[in-house]
Amino acid sequence: MAGAYNELLLSDTLVPDIFMVQYMPALKKDSISLYLWSLMTFKKGSFSFSEVRSYSVISEDDIKDALADLVANGLLVRESDFKFTFIDLKQIEVEDYIKHGTDSDGIPLMKSEEKSRNLLANSIQKTYYLGYMSFPYYRLIDKCLFDYKFENEVVYSLFEEGRDLKIHFNVQKMYNLASRWYEKGYITKDSLNDYFNYKNRRTACIKLLGKLTHRRLNELDYERIDRMTSEYGADAELIEYAFTALEYRGEIKIYMVEDKIKEWYVAGITTIDKAKIYEEERHQENKAKATKKRGRTNTRRTGKEAGITVDVVSNTSEDAKVNDSEPEVKDSILDMFSGVDI
Image (tube, rainbow, N blue to C red; front, top):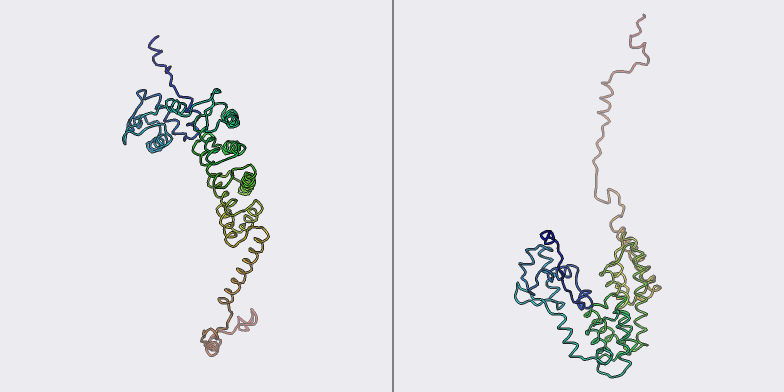
């Protein structure tokens, strides 16, 4: 009976909660699988590339990509070209805790002792992280408030936007979003209205192009829409007209729409009325060019004008000879018997 139990896999693998909260959302699927499998398999805390490859958990190319992803996200340390060691995530969390300190409520202290700042951090933690927000996000709040000079409402909106974009569990992407807001001057509640106007315009364009192309848009499509709406100032109405102007192309791709919007932008066109005038002028120009081209190539000329001559040979005498040699056709069937009575 004891031997039968030995065949069962009844062991446990400890995975820190901080991995679930802070690291896992930013990882690729293969990276998560490889990390969890490695925690289970290599209890000694380190392993080599050849050891992972020998188990054939995923393909060799995917192993390389997954290991690079885990190193880049601070979960593994590469000791040599072929050896990796686990990073103690709980130790890093404790060191951050000690470095930054906390107040009596357990909220990490910031540069300011103002209660409103701590209330803001506590609200963000409970609303967007279910009460489990790691220290890098507290540092982000600190950076937004004291380096970027964001108003409290703007900081809260930053995390709300991160959730809507499904990046609020990715520390680096949240930092990048905060940096973009700062560069664009979204630091006050009033200036943030410009961002939400842009966001609404972008959302409308995404829905429109998804409907027009009859497919689910991908990340590359979103990037093209971002350029059309932010760099070229296009709205849903202008994009829809660009799509209509391209109907002669058959199956229309979003890159074609972006090219048309960019063409208009370079020509100083940002409204649908000007775009219609521009397209009509282009249509007339193309029509005139086509007519002119036909005029050069399709001019009708006589054979003589074209330098073509044909020798005509008279066959009158030959026809007469043929006629003389042919037998006379009898007028009736009786003439064939030379008038002989039967």
